[in-house]
Amino acid sequence: MRGSTASKPFDPPRGIPIPRFLGVAAGIIALLALAAGGVRKELALTLMNSVFTAVLAYSFLGALILAGIHKKKARTLSVRLALRNISPGNRGELLLTRNGSGEGRFFRFPGILIRYELRLLTKDGRVIRHIFDPDNLEDDQRFFPVRERGAYYGAQDRFIIADCLGFFRAFFPIAQDGSPRLLALPAPAAEPVPVYIQSGGNAQRTEPHFQRTDDLTDHRPYIPGDDPRRINWKLYGHGGDLFVREGEPEPPPHSRLVILVDTQADPALFSPEAARRGVDLLCENALALAREYLDRGMDIQTGYTGGGIRGGGPAELAETLAYPAALPLAAGEELPEVSGRGVLLLALPRDSGEGTALDRFLRKRGGKQAADLVFLYRGEGLDEAAETCVRRYHQKAGVHARRLRVI
Image 1 (cartoon, rainbow, N blue to C red):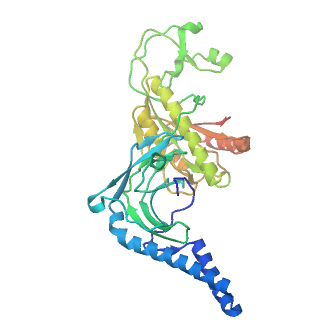
Image 2: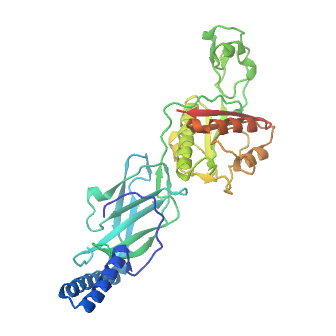
Image 3: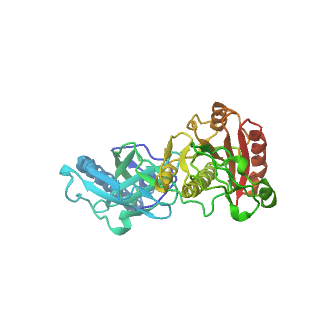
């Protein structure tokens, strides 16, 4: 029973041995052997029945007795993780402690296993289950794989007593607090998606005089917060990139921007697994954009559907973007409100737009406050839906919508 990951839902907590599939099968075989042996009066069938009955009785009684002996001691166990923040693809490390009377090894019967199960779950159904022997926490059992991004909670771990043949199992829940026990941070996308922000807010500054020139050496790339009157539209017409004319020396631009990840996914377009991968794509690109804008000296915050807004450096922004979880369009969670800042929204394409968190956010924000909206996705199959979204949202006042397919 080594550590592993799975996607099955958690079992309800129990406190006495319960029969598993093999236990039920063995019981049926024993009854059939008893009946056949009695009818045909065959010694072999009678012996088979005796063996099965003895094994079943030992498995059940052994698990039952050890469950009674270790019930209190099991609740003295406590597991914490050596690192709360980790990158997917690495291994997490657990630390087991025993409190009070929990010192010492567990008493055992031959063939009866004693195990501890670490149970972690994200809000969109990603599961980590790691099972280990609390008396033999070797390196291969102390570490467990973390394969996917997310904020992993754990309402309860489990202390398990089971026979080695899998006939019976007893377990006791070990309660945990409601805070995230593990944050698997997103990795930034290799290259930020090409997004030109039109809604970046400005801190107060004095605009200097500048020379009108088409010399590229007197220009620099446009940064959200620059005066649009300084954009050289002639250069934009040639190359498609925005540049502003360099004037006299001036204070650096101080743009204030919130990057929001809309985690709602349309069930008509995304399966639960595809929705989780889609939200991962949004978080990876949101982090890449945030880091790029931070390098430019901008004031960046991030947020997501159902959560708040947080600023800080790359580490803090990455931690925030571990939390977003894929939600259906009908979910009641809202995007956090934003005031006094520009907004860049990253969302998944959808067939339906009315009554979603995105629509409610834009309606509350109003047409006087601009917002940049990017529908980000992988795969050609979503091109049509994404283009429909762009046309629909581009008609809303103050919304600059576009779609980007990531290869």
